[in-house]
Image (cartoon, rainbow, N blue to C red):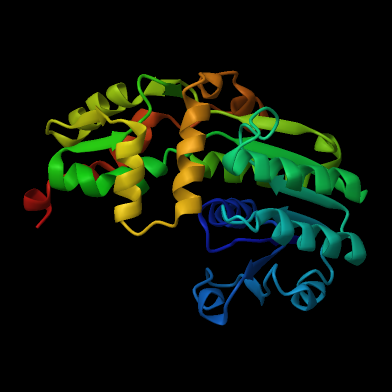
Length: 290
């Protein structure tokens, strides 16, 4: 039996959908009864919280393998650490940890937190596989669609940095492949990248083509982006972490294209163009979509 944590989130939700498609025996973990009530029909659910250690043993009863993911919060190391300890106590055989690209070589921001969680898992004695995905294609809509619809532009302090963005659904498919064949991937660390490295200016051009309207990428000073995020009410820790992550992107380290995902899945990765075509309506002007 597989336990999928973070089932209402982006990565956990993608793993859940892939596991359902594969017909895998599973249980989905949610933090609230309300979220659990939204689970796909027929999926076994459990309500637990990494911050509540007492809630974890019940969630792990009868579980052989766990997909472990936590939201990007400053408490990530503590929260995932609680779950790793609980997995060891429960006799879980294998943990697939959703980490992040940069965990091995960038001592700041989200990657540094993930690296500490990786070390905790390695030291636990529980068999493991670590996934380090690059940025998600889905973030294009999540973070940029609003300003694209309203202004025909999106903004960041990334310069001409190229990133091999990956579709979160491919991350989910990789995770399930490993969860179903854990012995083949024991002790492995996989960096997961998309099929091509593309900068924001090129992304803007491709959005323009699928949306049928001019869309621009506007590179802005880092301090201007900081102010804009703070003005939106984002907490300072999150703003700093995002800007540090962009610093990592600007090193070029996130532009790797190596075919790892295609090799693991036995099929090509989902592409940027496919994603943009599928989400073209998200980039239409507000007047057009009204």
